[in-house]
Image (tube, rainbow, N blue to C red; front, side, top):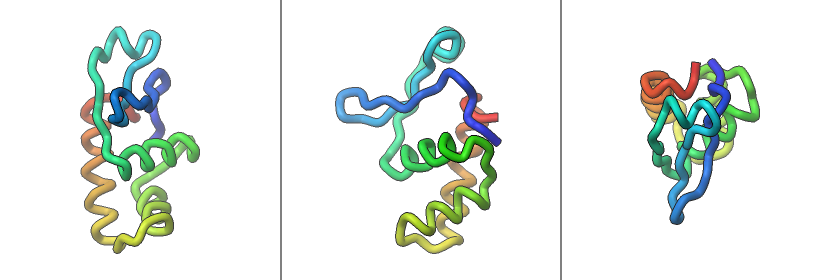
Length: 89
């Protein structure tokens, strides 16, 4: 998977949100609010370029004190949401 071009993480009124930029903004037209961990995963996905669930779970477990099972459940749910929204492919 990878993040789609045209979507960036911004801080708006103290909230971390993903917004469309350029043509992405025209087609998307909404903000996605993220908690700190989800924002970290978004940034990590951008650093990696290409990623999969296992890569993000491993990185999350390394950076935070979370067990692999919980991390996998959360990452899978987050990626499924992002796929549905069309911000990753």
